[in-house]
Image 1: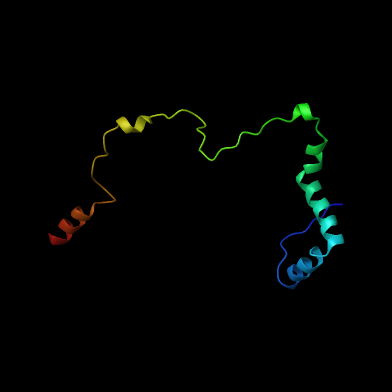
Image 2 (image 1 turned 30 degrees about the horizontal axis):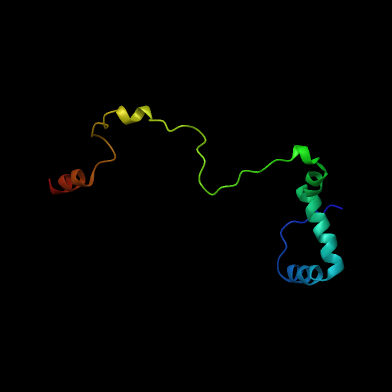
Length: 94
């Protein structure tokens, strides 16, 4: 069984909530969700193919830190647009 349902809201959502709270429909919906997420396929895997899933809340670095080459460049020469606030104030004063 596969459900192709888009966004549910309003009275349809309230009706679905009431229906899902009933025991027979809750079991059917749980089966559909397990099938959609592929949980039944995971349960079918033999025990030797399952391993410990590393779990931690610390961030993992994908690659080592690098220094970008632009850190060695000199700042751009002033001129043209955009001008600094000081340059604009001087231009209005003159």
